[in-house]
Amino acid sequence: MGAATEVECLDGTVRLARDLDAAASTPAAAPVAAAVTELLPMYSSVHRGAGFKSRASTAAFETARRRILAHVGREGGDDTAIICRNTTEALNHLAFRLRLEPDDVVCTTVVEHHANLLPWARYARRRYVECGTDGMFDVDDVVAALCAQPVPRLLAITGASNVTGWMPPVDAICDAAHDRGVPVVLDAAQLAPHRLVPRGPDFVAWSGHKMYAPFGAGALIGPRGAFAEGEPFLMGGGAVELVDLDEVLWAPPPEREEAGSPNVVGAVALGAAVEEMARVGWAAVDAHEAALGDRLRSGLAGIERVTLLGPPPEIPTLAVASFLVDGMPHGLVAARLACEYGIGVRHGCFCAHPYLMRLLGCRDMAGTRARVLSGDRSAIPGAVRASVGLGSTVTDVDALLDALRQLTAGTEAPVPYRQDPLSGDFFADTSVPGWWSAGSAAGGGCAQG
Image (tube, rainbow, N blue to C red; front, side, top):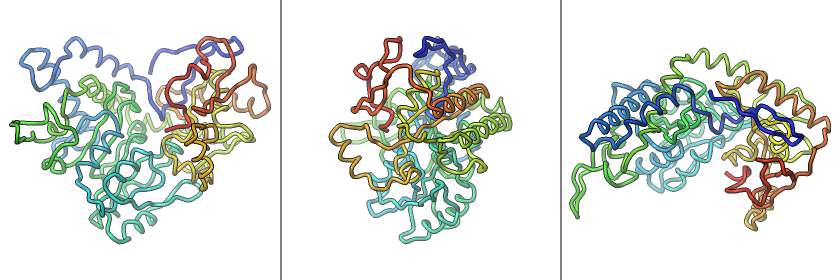
């Protein structure tokens, strides 16, 4: 999935950089990078130009759209694919276009990523499906929420948790929702790179950057009729057929929903990624990740002082595992894995605060909230997350487990670590190139999100 990279660790040893953060973003698959390279000499505006390059770019863009529809089994029907930046934009887009009313209810779950929680609150009320201490719920829990009054306008649910990798029974949930006349929106951002997307949901959104196409595009799939009337989410060129100073004739979907110059490179990359996943085959993807995921989760569960969050190891999940190390802040665990062992993981709340707080048993956040408002993020609860993808190996997983055994055995850090209260992250007090001090850190910390 990309050339191997080496990093100089704090002890002066040059180690292979092991990226165990596929749940956040993935590297470009070689065929995806090749498709982008092939496109670039022909890159031009789409849908507007008469020149050869413009027509070639338009053809590439629309071919990608057809591939995206085919990936979720929607080609040749009444559905359309809208090219967005990512899943977050897609769900915000949909929340606007469904023309929800303030008294409408959107049923969702506490397991969701913020992208499938926050947009609905802008337009409607939310009703939640709760989870157990193991981070799971069942179809009956969803049915109870669907049957409560008033009947929800929509059910918005994840295909797989980005925190625990747990996969709700989407097919059965869709059947239950449709039996009650409730359409279903599926956040497939975490699921799509690892499993075939279920055919039952009415709307599906996912991102290329998690699916070996990190060029800034995602997709929103849904019935063309849902976008055929009313104003689009974004207004501008390309979304219209005729404009006067007092009137606009909007173009039909999907053009109505793609104002401005679209991300042709990102669309082509995403189209190439779904083609590559089909070539590899879902059975091969599943077998590879199941083997690594089982090794990862059972290995973590077997290390003293490590607590695996979410379902027990025997429950099938994606190859994603969030965990705690007893007596060591989550940010420090992540920093030491990176600086001393060359292992990249994620720490913090993973843009799923309500879910993680339930897994951690943290319900009273008043003190933490007060500190955050004062600019101190050092006490935000969180965990460490390791996740694998198609480029991950058994050696990568074993390197993480070996490093954690050393840390939990009391191996001392070669240099002090200091926590930056503004970001909540830990930084090594070192002059080794690449391991920045807190004062030079840019952007938000891992604990935020």
